[in-house]
Image (cartoon, rainbow, N blue to C red; front, side, top):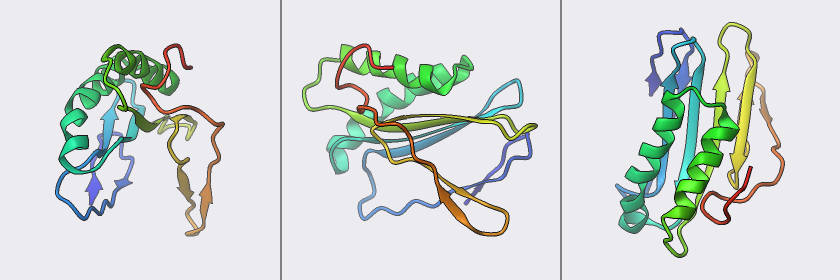
Length: 143
């Protein structure tokens, strides 16, 4: 599936799931300044138990993206919100990126999630290694 943005950035996505609902989700947000923000996340658990928490996490992430917050701040604020929910054994791995379409500069922050892959014009794929970080909702004050 290709997702349109008015910035002309082409975003392709493919997701496979053996069940119809779960904790995996992504957001693509076109910022007013022309940059594009992307969040990929996975709520701990499987099936309906994980899916039940997705809407609250998504809402919080969308609020940060709408404010134009940088990726690290998006994840830090969402972490504090999750910690404040006081739900035992509830955590979220996430990756957030903000792409300046004009310059190609990309800011990336991760929280316990696998790093992204960059697909080059020649078809080669390159894995981006991120510094180790805890999943969201585990400890307050994580940056």
